[in-house]
Length: 334
Image (cartoon, rainbow, N blue to C red):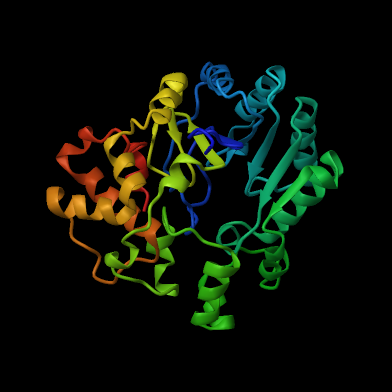
């Protein structure tokens, strides 16, 4: 018997989509243009909502870049600890300009009950953040949390990004110049394991083969949405399953009802289309009902196809008919 839908093992709490970067691979279209943060009074509500799940899970406190509002991040860690929810924090280390600051913040989080930190390392982050800050964050985190409490994602990229120097950010074009476009594309798409949703299909799609929409026919998203082990609650109340930025399966504020609906197979219209027939089914619906025009160059993957169709739907006057297309500002961040 399959497990019930919408039961993640690793749930992210998006405190904001605001980030000092606007990385080319970002699945959630984060960047400096976002302004909102989760209201402090919503933090306990979000954690209480999670308790509707009886199976073990952990929470990652994330963004955007959660360290840009450290008091809110610290409060989230404290609330999670009080409720017995194991938490770790994610960061791109862009804020990490001094060892003293890094040690101070990590120690405050540890004392609040935080169990670990995840520090991102990739060529996409290193386009905005000098690798020296990444190394500093890792070293300070190990000192505070111990090696077992520090996750580097992805550790193999530490050496690669450092080859271009530690003190300055490195434009992505440097990889094509150094390795050639084909190898740079392979490093990005295969070596990092890019997902073509969010910005990646648009910003990095020319570095991988692009295919017509028909090539994705028959590729369902049932597993990606219904049985995702990694999902998010965002600051606006959206429950985002899997890595589907900009696609809300419903509201976490009414999680018990949402879980009941999904267990009974009652899905919102766009979710139903993706579960039954994948992005190609959504593509056919958008062609038929909303005047969607396919991208002439094709798509970098099924998630790119889905993102582009949803981007079109979000631009239409009838977008109110699809509350799944949330948060709205996601569709302005490509």
